[in-house]
Image (tube, rainbow, N blue to C red):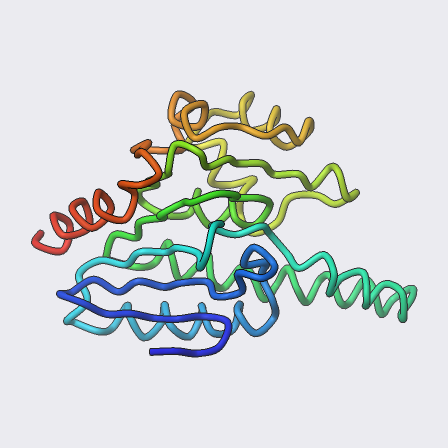
Length: 209
């Protein structure tokens, strides 16, 4: 099922959600937020779905919010309009996280390339994270003068501990898949050319129950 910014493929009880904006590293658009929330809600109540995979089109998982869209808005608006805009964007993201955590079926993040900002939030909200060995993770909010959204401040400390979560938040450094595995966020680190195959094996096991 193709829905512009989000593609949904269903096969043998596994639903794969593909964030589909590869030209901007799958940066999260307002349209994508709405589509993801709708898709997750439908999958939750589909008895034929046993497992959900979240991935990104192209070479990256997800590079966070669409900074270009933000910049365009900031350059044409001011004051309370900007405040309302950012609050609206944040509030539109949180229902996705609620849907993911309510989901009675396991959700697996398949991470290739960059998982940045809200991309880390989405990965942390999943039940399992499978990453290619060349993947990297960064919150990066501090580099653009914002604070973490999308539940990363909730899920990250529970996965990697409060001190490590604060380190990622306050310094905005980049971490390899292996580092994130050692810290506790990533479950499996897979050679890049085997990521699809190994992910399929793991989710097939989950779908079989």
